[in-house]
Amino acid sequence: MRWLLPILCLLAGSACSPCSQSCRQEAAAFDECLDGWGLGWADLGARDRNDFRDQCIVDNKSYVRSLDTELRRAEEGLCADLAHSLRIANDCDSAWAALTEYGLAP
Image (cartoon, rainbow, N blue to C red; front, side):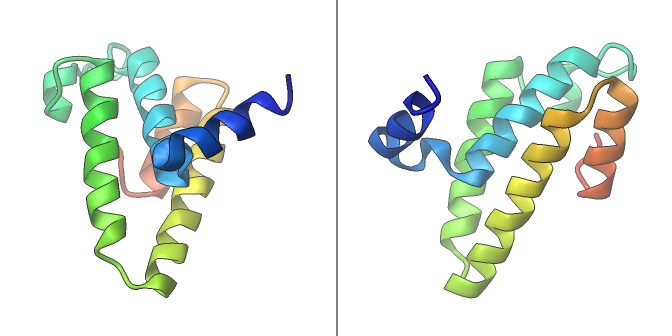
């Protein structure tokens, strides 16, 4: 099973890019924590988790494509770091801290 995700990523192309992964992790964190933070999806400009995730992925792809190679690598590194930080966040306070660190708290 450990080999399944890398194979799926290769087949899907950019679906497994670091920034797409960070969008998925952001959406999951927001889905779990928005109510506790006194916020809703509308505060993020989205209808729901899937809408947020999809728009985040589109926006990130567009932004990353506009960068030169060096800046693109740096941005993808930040995305990977954010995705990791959110993946290991064990509660909404940790998720908020990770989002704030990357300038993404709602």
